[in-house]
Image (cartoon, rainbow, N blue to C red; front, side):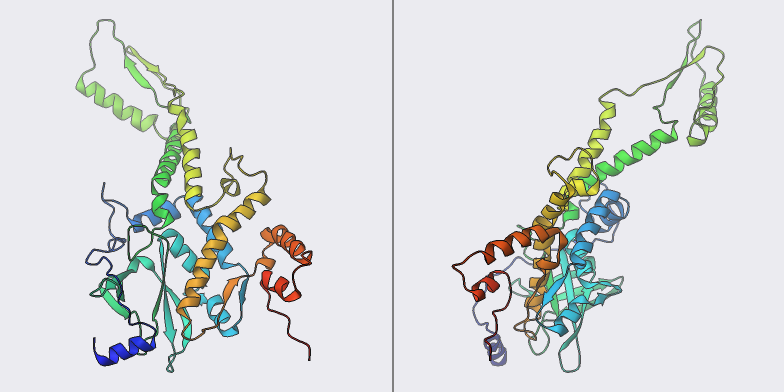
Length: 385
């Protein structure tokens, strides 16, 4: 490292050696847009199509989480920072888009777009499956590769002045140094089961809402059908009696033929329970109480109000705090005293909790007025002139 680099590192508060990170591996999202081969492992692009766009439970769960966080009232002490965070990114809410990226993919990347003076003027959320981490000699990220089709753009971690170009927000992954783990991967198997059960129901409806039967040939002399007779009967059955349009159509049989209906056993009918269990697993992966998704058989919460409060306390607020803390830390070079948080007093689902807190604090006679205000998240009262 040169003298100028050492000097710049010292001014930025660095200088201490860091432990090396793992490097030299292929990004787990590098083939996210490729085909999903059998047994080829998890594929993000394929899971988005099958898991989010084609599955109503997963899509509704993700929308509940992302839209709630995106529309949550934001408390900020800097109007310019609040305007940037509240703005749209590629026509979508910045916070809602980042929330979807972190929940589905496990990683969120925010590009800081600056003016000629080097001040941030826009925050743009990059598609996470197009971004890969470029590690330096010690394994720590030094740049980010943004790949679209045959074009690859390298975005340095920091600009010439040493300020960040990218804010990387990632969900916790215990065995990966550079990438987070998304909830969509955890729900992948449950989504596949739920989709298969839905396809089974559709196939059953296409077949007169009952399972198929068998055409039995019972000749008096014990003779079997010839190959031509077998192929002709099979073709006639497929054309005249199979499919939704032929449901319930009467069948005329002769020559020793009889129709034997088949019923589903209780074990076969268990696919309905399996579908319900898969739907609950999907809701669990995204942190949404099943009651809020209209899933039957959920007795964990006594009512919707309690389930909604649990959603905010256990899922929405921790996720919002993760996003706001990352944005606040990434923009600290320009807004060192900035604070971003959810205004809890304006969240209807938490009104009872806030009312109880206000009552407890106001009745604490051993606290001063300024201490009470600080416990409620308010600034101390300014001294009167």
